[in-house]
Structure formats: structure tokens, C-alpha cells
Image 1 (cartoon, one colour):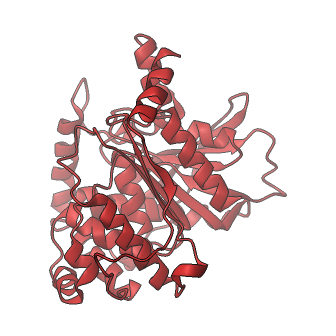
Image 2 (cartoon, one colour):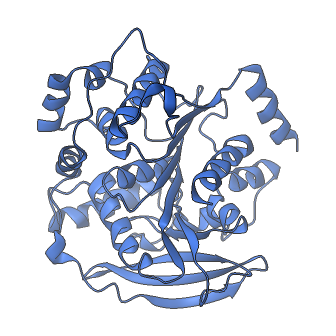
Length: 365
């Protein structure tokens, strides 16, 4: 309770802003016309690297490895192929009273943050008990898949490559060692494929392929939410795959706002033709997500941030971009893009999670 109160008090003292930005006249900078989405996606896929193509997609051969009644929801452990020699395990969560044979519900993908246990952290399932009250709170701040299934959504939580049951090295190894080991193996087969970008997106897309075929999934209401590394996955996937209808990202997807990319078509074209720099490419990711609903939550005191120059001005331009991409006018349309500044450092505390969940409910229900 003390940690929760501290979070709320700090949020009030620092005047954390919660708003869905409305399209209004920007007298300082004028947004250039939107770039066709297919051009943005093409450039982003080049940046993600050269990996497998459509011809390399294999039958996922989905298997239900386990199913447990968790009291307030059902948790399936499933496995499926993402490549011909690589099988992934994931959790598929259903509300307790949901009748899969008769009903449809929205689906929310819940990629996990950096954590050795992978998918288990977003359902608060750890091999060891929490050390203390602070550790209990830390775990609760990452259980967004568990929270959302309790709110009536179908949730999907897979292991990212090198995490959870996809770790290569045995024993007590750091996550950086696991990543290096996985990268080395990946480079043997796909030397020009991005581990952080292309591989992550491919794996999520292969899961989406079979998830949207289930009769109980409402394919018009598919979303993704993530924290930290999972926030990057939220942006990386939603910008190139329009099967994602709504996206939310907390403490990740760092934007190095570059006004020239929003106001100057020539500068934008230069980056499109020569994509480089993950944080700079995040500008193009946001353009490619438009005009689908997107919420970004970020801490003004996140130790992983190296400053956020002109961030508010950047979101003003983003709103204008959304408006133009949707073919709407300033006076008649509210852009479905939001930003929430909090002061929870690199965390996903109660206030931020509640806002994100409300955002998802507003756009999915």
C-alpha cells in the first residue's frame, strides 16, 4: 500500500499528464502530408533485416501442452512452430466463464519485458517466492496478461527468443549471455536478420496467423500491449501488421523525435531510402501505426532515457499526422493517440496500468 500511495503522490506532485491529444492548430511546426503506409512498411521491413520469406512459413502444428483452471481464468500452455526447426511455448488465457464454442472476445497480445522467466512474468508465475514487499509489487507491475484476462479479454503471452523456455544456455546465466548465445545461432542461418527487430516480429506474426483463425477470437478487435522490451515489440509489430487494431506501449519504443521527419518530405524520404537507427526509426513506426489507436506511456525520470527533447512538440505533430492519415479535419475529429507522462522510473505501476487497461477497453469493447 505504501508503494502504491507513493506512486500516486509522486504522480500528482509532478503533474503527470494524461490526455488523448486533440487535433488543434500548431502554429510552430506544420506536419507534411502522410507517406503512403506501404512505403513506410517497406522501409521498416528493410530495417528489420533479411530473414525468412512467405515461402518459409511452416504449419504451426499447434499443440495444447497443458490446461489449468486458475480460479478466475483458464490458462493453456501451447506450443507451435515459428520456423521448421524451432518450436515456441506460450500461454493462452481465457476468462473463467467464457464459452469458446459459442462466443467471441477481443484478443490481446502481451509480449513480456526483459526477464529471464519470459512469458511467466506477465502472468506472475515465478519459480521462487517473492523476496519481500517490494518484490511483490515489482511482479504485480508486470502481470498485465493476468490483469487483462481478469477484465474479460483473451490474452496471449509467448516466450521471446532467448527468454523463458527458449533459453539456450543451461545454468544460472545472465539474460545478456542468453541473448548472445541465441544471436550466434540465429546468425548462422540468417546473418542479415535483426534479432531485436525482424526475429521478434516474425515470431509474433506466426502466432497471429493461427490465433486469428480461432472462431472464438474477434479479429476486428486484436490489440497488443507491452512494457519495456515488450513495449518495443508492441510498436515493432503494430507498425507493420494491420491485424493489430490497437496498441499500447509503456517504458519502451523510445522516440528520438526528429522534427524534420514530420515536416520535411525530403528528409523523411532520405530515412525511408536508408533506414538506420532504432530510436530514429521509431518516428516512422508511429507514422505506420496511424490512424489506428495508439497509447504511449513513459516516465519523465526513466533511467534508460537519454533525454526527450521536443517530445511534446513531437506529439502535436503526430496528432496532425494521424488526422491527415485518416482524412479528417481538426474541428471534427479527436485523434486516437495518447501519451501519459508518469514518474515511475522504468516501471509499469498501478496508475499507468489502469490507464492502459482503460484505453484498451475503450477501443476494444
